[in-house]
Length: 362
Ligand SMILES: Cc1ncc(COP(=O)(O)O)c(C=O)c1O
Image 1 (cartoon, rainbow, N blue to C red):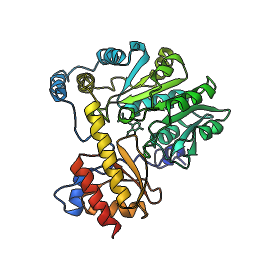
Image 2 (cartoon, rainbow, N blue to C red; image 1 turned 180 degrees about the vertical axis):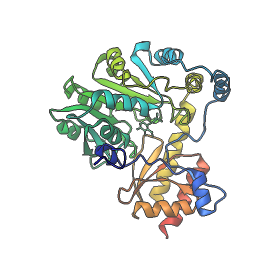
Image 3 (cartoon, helix red, strand yellow; image 1 turned 45 degrees about the horizontal axis):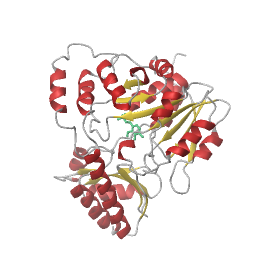
Image 4 (cartoon, rainbow, N blue to C red; image 1 turned 90 degrees about the vertical axis):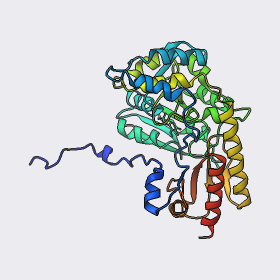
């Protein structure tokens, strides 16, 4: 008997879909609110840097032509920016798309991938898409990626180890030295992906990028994105830094023309801007939120990113609803009583703290 519906892979059907932060307009309509503050997706509140929108507008004039598939000009600019060669850079439509290339090129049936939990959920989703067995490794008791436990979880068939630094959703970080030790301990046949989506926000003195290590070792890749501090989440540009051969190999799993001309132009027009203003503003926002939480008597993980992981004492879904009804959207992870809030403008951070104070009361 032929099936009455198309046959879909059971492992694909088992995927818990990626749940993006709820758009502000949806919450506004749902609760009849005029103003909603969205602090749910770790976006930059300032938007694109000056000059970027004009560069995008000019690029849109060329929309009848396919984009430059090799992302040549941006790749060269990124190479100069990082002090590496152009062949040490590989761009994709967001670092999510680069992660997808990696998962497809390196994983697959019979292999396993090791990642911290909770961490960026795409590591798990992409493992399933690739048919890779995903192994969750709980964070340590300070909500940090547990590097020893990650190492211990590596099996004979493990091809991929993910580290998110600083870690999403907890905002905690591991020192550069600790990550170099991890890279040293891994077998060269295992690819270590160090996802540095939030690296530009980190200010701790022992935090450091692994980009230079990635240049030297075929089995380490560092991922960066324009979606966070550069404020280009909607345009979709991310990149990997690493060994030319490894990058060339994973690029085979990429579909053509994924980085649009507008996105390439936007990233290029952003790259020369100084990030210290945004970094400082974010740091002050983290500190304002953290001291507000201390006043409320709530526990949180000290953050090196643009978000804070908070123990509210109330079931996450319920806190999410109470905050949303007061016009503040955060991210509920379905992980007990913890929620994640993104740093916004000072007034938005205060609006969150006020809404949280009222939500705790009921
Ligand atoms: C840790 C981490 N890596 C990667 C991404 C994906 O970013 P992009 O917009 O570049 O796909 C995110 C987005 O939230 C993230 O939190």
